[in-house]
Every structure is written in C-alpha cells, then in structure tokens.
Image (cartoon, rainbow, N blue to C red):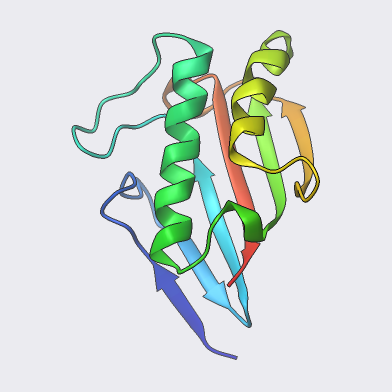
Length: 127
C-alpha cells in the first residue's frame, strides 16, 4: 500500500501537521476545509452562503488536483457552529452534487471551529 500526498495551490495550505488530502488504494481522503481564500489567505465569512461556497471551492480544487471530482465523492462530513444555518449550508452544498448520486453524509453541530468559522467540510472520494 502506497500513499500519495495531494496538495493544490488552488486551495488553502495546511496550517498544521496534516495534508490537504491523501490518496491510497483508489480512495482520496480530503481534510476538512474552511472558508480561506487561497489567493489572499483571507477568510470569506461575510455570510454563511459565501462561506460555504468558498469551502466547496476549496474541496473542488483538491479533488481536481487528485484527478477526481464531486461525482466521485462517497462520504462527506459537515461540521457547523450553529445548526440553525443547516438550510443555507445544505442549499449551497446541494449545488455541487447530483441528488440522485449524492454521497453519504453527516452534519454535526460543534462548539467551535478553526478561526471561529461557521462551517467545515471534509470528504472521501474515489480516484
């Protein structure tokens, strides 16, 4: 079993001892992404919709770097600071997946996220 580290310049660089993603045995494990804009390092957190779109753009960049896309995502995890934002987050999230083939998922409210953002999403995809 060999593992390949995936890093995209079009997604935020890791801020700790982890990789953006790891590819192993035909699977891609993508670390949780928050709303950092990779071009300027600033948070995109004016509202939950903009924040969620940036998270999804970051995931997309990593998936593409690994040679895959949202259609191959089999599992995602959504962590939110306030579950009252679920409908807005779900609306944005749904724009990136075909409802007929959408991945398995959980959405969990947490006490706090890095840099006090409102949403973080990770995923597992086929490559």
